[in-house]
Length: 192
Image (cartoon, rainbow, N blue to C red; front, side):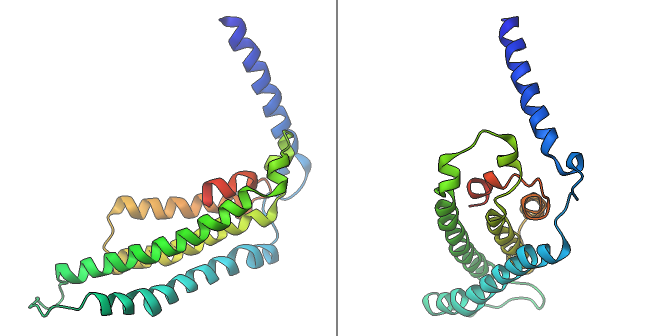
C-alpha cells in the first residue's frame, strides 16, 4: 500500500514541477494580461452580455409576461410590494436567466468540441496557458452577473446565499479572463 502512495506522490510531484515551470511569475512574464487586452477581451464582452440580458429582460420577457399574466388589482401599503409583484419579478428573472444561460451553454458545448481540446495534450503548459479565445465564456458569465446582481437585489429580493454565489462566480470568472495562467482549457466545461 505504501508503494502505491509513493508512486502516485512522485507522479503528482512531477506534474507540479511542470506546472510551476510554466507559471508567469517563474518565466518572467507579467501575471496579468495588458490593460488593452483586458478591456477588449473581458470588459467589452461582459458589458455586451449584461446589456443584452437587460434588453431581453425589460424589452422581451417582462412585456410578454405582462400579456400572459395580467396584473390583479390589489391593495398594498405604500412602500411595500405585493406577493404577486414579487412572484412576477421572479418569473421574469428566471426566464431571462434561462435564456442567457442556454445561450452560454450552447457556445460552451461548441467550444468543448473544439479540435484543440479533442486532440488534447497532456503537457501542463498547454492546459494552463493559451486558448485565450476560450476566455469569452467567463467574460460572458461576468456579464450575466452584472445583470443578475442588481436585479437580484432590487426586483427579486434574492437571499444572501445567492448574492454570495453571484459574487463568487465573478471572482472565479476573473481567473481565466485576466491571468496569463488562466486554465482556459477547462472554461468551456465550467462556464458553458
